[in-house]
Length: 180
Image (spheres, rainbow, N blue to C red):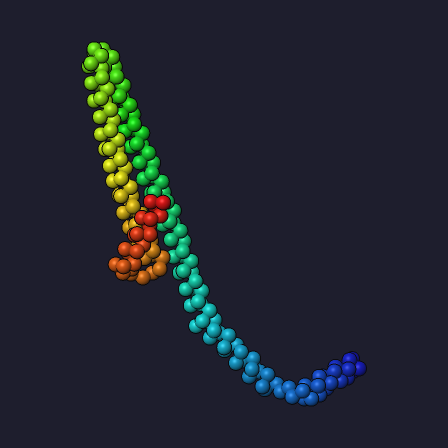
């Protein structure tokens, strides 16, 4: 047993001499370890956690913005579907009116037939005018709604209150996008 202790004493002496040669001091080493631990704890508490909290809040805002974007897309799709439905109904009604006009015109004399066709074409033109007006009104409503939603979403995404100029600019951009 004694030779093992003698060997370990020799190794320890060698380590101690090497440390002294390079200027290693245990008291400085322990003070540096304590300083490092204090700095690490302070950074963990006052820097790392707040940064993580900010990143989580930002991630939540982005997720909310994506959800709002999907909601806006769905509303736009619904509005387009309603628009197509209105057009289809108007076309069916217009065709129905044309068919009725032609059926009644065939039973009348040639003169009455020409008069009925002229009236039917007038009705078609008025129906198309009304349809165009309704479509323009639906698009105007759609543009206003999408513009409002874009302004609202942009305000939520940026986290600031938008000025009247910002709202007007975003509304115009959204209207141009829809028109295209």
